[in-house]
Image (cartoon, rainbow, N blue to C red; front, side):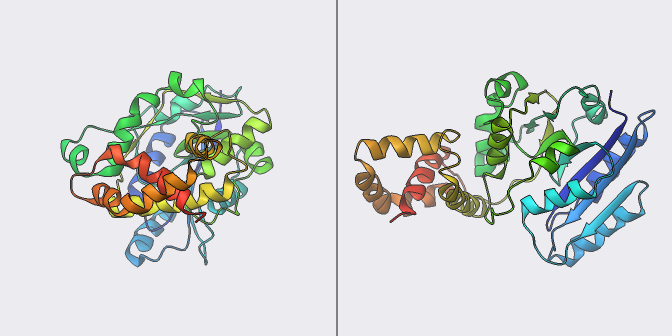
Length: 296
């Protein structure tokens, strides 16, 4: 049983005082648990958000750090790991909701593991399921979110949204700070755990995703992620279905054809993704075409 826990939350321009307050309340109610909640603000530009998050410092066993320059998601997580005082680290994304009051408790029996991940879930929302591309995507892949499904591909299924790890594991295998764009840092981290033969245990202890960016912003993030994947393609050749498809097209001599099709259809596909009624069926073809276009 785990008796000491550092809860770590990286943030950028996101209010997480409400989240930290709830976590602090739950942690304080667990008999015998020594805990701390550390938040690292990655040089947020929203003054109102920063001022609200600074109230975290008024809560017992809670502290907020504010970076002077934007260091990136990977560096921010590594920083939090270095600041933590306890041997077990629970990483949570900012602005996720806890499913119930037993969320922290559900992690504590897993002291024999090195990395434990609880997964994510969403709540039904008819408006978002019709209008929001990110929500539609999370809804589509929800059947793969169960612990049983994730454990079938434990490293490829790893997400940084909600996981616990030994501090020594993170210090010895830090997140790659050379990734300066959005995306794939969790996939690369999972691969490095695989290479080091560090097992990942998947459990059903999901947090609830609550933040769904606009369709335009989400597509822009996907485009950034394709550049990240392009930079990491040698490292992730066996970890990305998109890379596998791209390699098959290359072996078949179809890359010029695929790029030509994307040039002719990219504006139409993108418009169908960012509109008020986005077509989720266009997401994977757009990702593949955009990825292939990077080399042109």
